[in-house]
Length: 302
Image 1 (tube, rainbow, N blue to C red):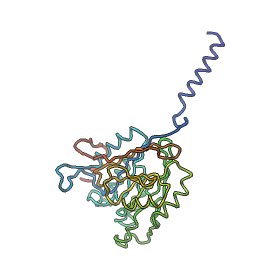
Image 2 (image 1 turned 180 degrees about the horizontal axis):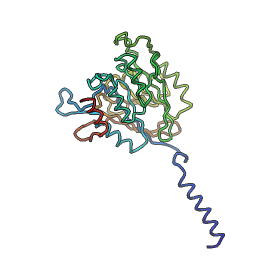
Image 3 (image 1 turned 90 degrees about the vertical axis):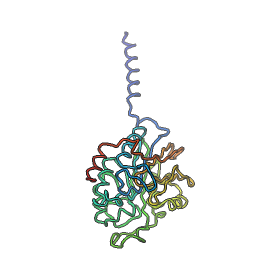
Image 4 (image 1 turned 120 degrees about the horizontal axis):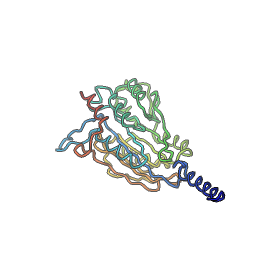
C-alpha cells in the first residue's frame, strides 16, 4: 500500500473509532425512554398472604423484587416508594421498621417519601431509620425531622429528574401528639409550587412523590401546573392505569406489595411526550423469589 493510501486509511480508521467508541451518554440525544417502578403502603407485608375472601396467596416482597430486577434490565429505571413502608405487619413492627429498610437497601430503592405511619415509632426511631437508608427519604412540607430532604435530583437515561416529596398533614389530626412533638407540616400545594419554581430550570422532568392520597393528588395536579408525574400513596388506591389531570400523570400502586406499579415515559425536550402505565399483580405462584431478599425476609421472620 502506498504511503498516501496508508495515511488516508489511518485517518478513516481514527474517525471510525472516534465515532463508535464515543460513550452513548455523550452522543446527541433527541429523546429518552425511562421507567418508573413504584410501590406504596407496603406496611411491612414481606411474606405472601391470602387476603380476606381470596383462595390465592398474593404479594411477597422477595417475589416483587425479582420482577423489579427483570423490568430494570429492559430500560433505565427509578424505583420509588410512596410512603407507609415501616409500620403494619409484625414483620416490620417488632423491629420498628429496621427489617423494611434492610430489604429496601438490598433492592436498591432510589428514593422514598415519608408516610404518616413512618412517624408511628416516634421521631427518634424515624431519624434512625433515615440514617440507615442508602437512599434519600423526602418530606418537603415537614419541619422538625433531621435527615428528611425536600427534594432530590436523579439522572436516568440521560434525563435529569427533580423529585419533590410531600406528606399528608392528617398526621396532626389522628396520631398521638407525642409522636409528632416539635414537628410541623406546611400545606402541600404551596410547598410543591415553591420547590417546583426553583427546580424546573435545572431538570428535564418534575415528579412529586406524594403521600397525600388519590383525591388530594388530583387537587394538587389542578392547583400546581408544571408537575409532570405524581407517584402517590396513602389512600391504598388501586389505579390500573395512569390518570391524567391537565398536564400531570398520576399513578398509585395499591398496597401490601400485592402490585408493582410500572410507568414508562418517553421524554423529549423536557416534556413527557408519551406514556403508558400498569399495575402488575405480584403472584408468588408464578414469580420466583429473589434469593437475597428472601434470605432477609426469613432472617427477621425467624
